[in-house]
Image 1 (cartoon, rainbow, N blue to C red):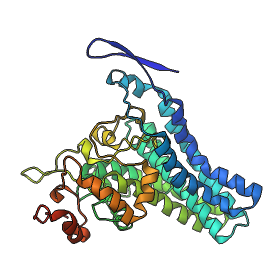
Image 2 (image 1 turned 30 degrees about the vertical axis):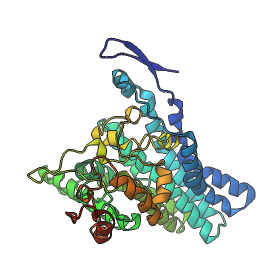
Image 3 (image 1 turned 90 degrees about the vertical axis):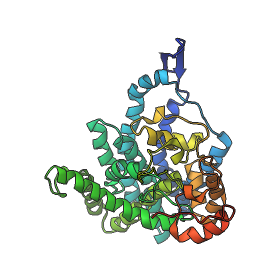
Image 4 (image 1 turned 45 degrees about the vertical axis):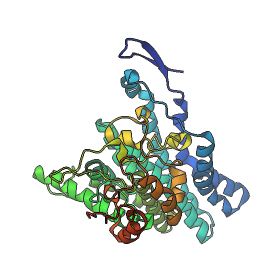
Length: 401
């Protein structure tokens, strides 16, 4: 297995081997999981096989994360530059782009050409959409890089779920406002994922167009200019959608609507758990401090990180957004999730259970220490949270919305 040699500050020579090097291929093959359900349905005729991707993602994956455990190892800084330049890791992010298109086309073909019941049709569209949520994750990894080719691929892959505004919104909006009440992509304490979705999805769309309009205005260009990256990605989505409708008929339209909706909800699920309740401090002038590692929730669970290009080491990503997935680091004493993302999604979909587990973790963080003034709170949940958590301090929290 390939290794990297470097020299520590002490002068000691080291040799580092990424033990997960070949396991990162899971991020490439995981979006193909609908094919197994399709094949099993084809062989048996049972439509219940379309539930299999749900079981694998929301039951088996969380269990495997729990059984396999966590990996807190970091690559030594002395070899990070070599690790970043290794083309193998970059090629995996390139390779998965056509995989997302193949999965969408195959699922649309099967759903519209086979004699499926209405619920099996809807189920396959939803499965394809949940898988397309991984395309947004791929676009996230690619869209943070400085090469023109990777930024181009980000626009291409984001066209699969029709979420072409993501890179603009995420890079220039979310990363600026993260863990503040101004960020529609940062969830608040006491806010259920369902209320969060109604704020996050339209809020992200509006912010993307606003920041891109500002960029183009500074260049004396209209918002509808061809250099608008949102429009470029949307154009690919439009072509893809038209081709699918022409190929497979009117049934492709409801398929695509369900597909895109559940792809959006996958991103919403990730955004919900990544910064829940975390709040950046303000200085005397009211300016928010720079985003710190303790402003993101993290997970070192092995399996889910391997299929999500290390997305769960989220603190290091926000500290160094251009750092590639294979180099992201673990830090001690940071906000930590009790399971990988898939398991936390399940928790989030049951709000009372999410609040029961996560509110205690949030209030127990070293930089919070039970102080509601140090938490990003949902204004609608303020009275109930004050009764539960603010009583000991005898001080009503200050809410800034």
